[in-house]
Amino acid sequence: MPVHATAALSPTHTAVPGATAWDEELLRRYDKSGPRYTSYPTALAFNERFTTDDFTQALKRSNTSQRPLSLYVHVPFCRKICFYCACNKIATKNTALAEPYLSRLDREMVLTARHLDTSRPVQQLHWGGGTPTFLSLAQMGDLIDRLDARFGLSSAADRDYAIEIDPREADVFTLRHLQSLGFNRLSLGVQDLNPQVQTAINRVQPRVLTETLMEEAHRLGFRSLNLDLIYGLPFQTEKSFAETLSQVIELNPARLSVFNYAHMPTRFAPQRRINETDLPNADEKLAILHTTIEMLTNAGYVHIGMDHFARPDDSLAIAQRNGTLQRNFQGYSSHAQCDLVGLGVSAISRVDDVYAQNPTQLNQYEAALDQGRLATVKGLRLNKDDLIRRDVIERLMCDMQIDLGAIGKRWRIDAVSYFSMALEQLKTAEQDGLVTCDQQTISATPTGRLLIRHLAMAFDARLPSQTTQRYSKIL
Image (tube, rainbow, N blue to C red; front, side, top):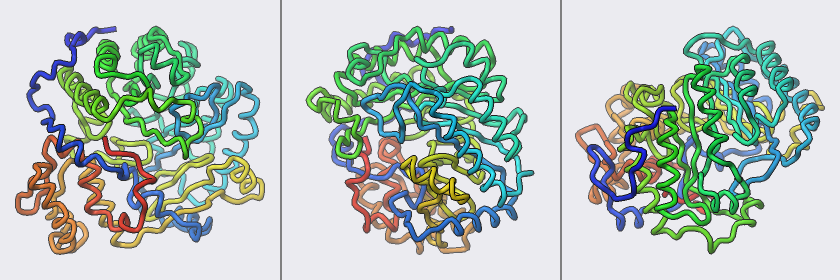
């Protein structure tokens, strides 16, 4: 495994060419709660008036576009609960419990594919959870076979087939099997390499587990490896997280996701096992974030936006340079313009001009499919204003700027007039140095990139009617 030359960096806050400017007082002032904009409108706007029929009509409409497909499969099972987790999951060590779930997934595939032109290529496949590697090798093979039978999977070199992996539950045989199934990208959950932090979050995971898997993945030729880290966990300090980052930089992943831990114990029961007094305070969290950006920038990573970093030769960084980066429910994606079909409990689809969500409760999901119908429980059909604002917010989140001239041409509107209220809202941010406005181009400054969620909120017409308490803090 190649060791990066800057692995021994410590949090000294030295200046980095092109690095993000840092104004602690300003960042603290803007560190409010707000959406992550993996969709616009956000899931809080979904309603139960949206029916299965609405979703099937959207599936049929989407065929005329001939857009490629993206499939997301939610596998909700985990062997152990991590205390920080806010995912929809079921803790069990019995893999046999997955069998009836896989049967329902297949039933959902059949019902969905009935309305789709399945000659459309499946450019993107993502298995999330839970822990998809909870499944046995035979179960994973069976699931791939079912997906291929219903939708027709791709063998194209530019396909993006990814799976989330818990290094505690996978070995070299798992990786070889995944490669044979067609996966070419892996995302490994690490969170932190500090033993005290790992014990506090109930996720003891020695570095050697991650390192062994990464070495094998490189040897097998997986195209891109992502590591997930979380800052804001119990007992983390700027110094301790810098030590984790030094080790991670040595491992040299193509991508890194460094998520902000949102402590919401009233919403997520496992978080009640975390002692709030053990969490780093707001100043320490900002210091950790500062160190993270500086160390990764020094190590040659591109700060894509929010919590994503990538090497310059990775497809995420290339897509951002080309203006083709997209955001969806899995975060940033290099495969733009796909219709996303979500399969499984809690999964969300983005097809044509609708969002459709399955129930978060397994029994409700099972009951719907046992009755021979899709499990859609809520969703939203976007109106023209939603579509325009989705385009603007997505471009801002992905490109870190908005070309109002291009927006105006695309939607046949006077974009400056259309967004006059949003532009008025952004004046304070402009005065504070978060954005620059040059004729019809709005660009986030280095500091503004850190607060891109706040900038996007100016274009969110639905936000005033929602309670921001349901959202995490920006930093």
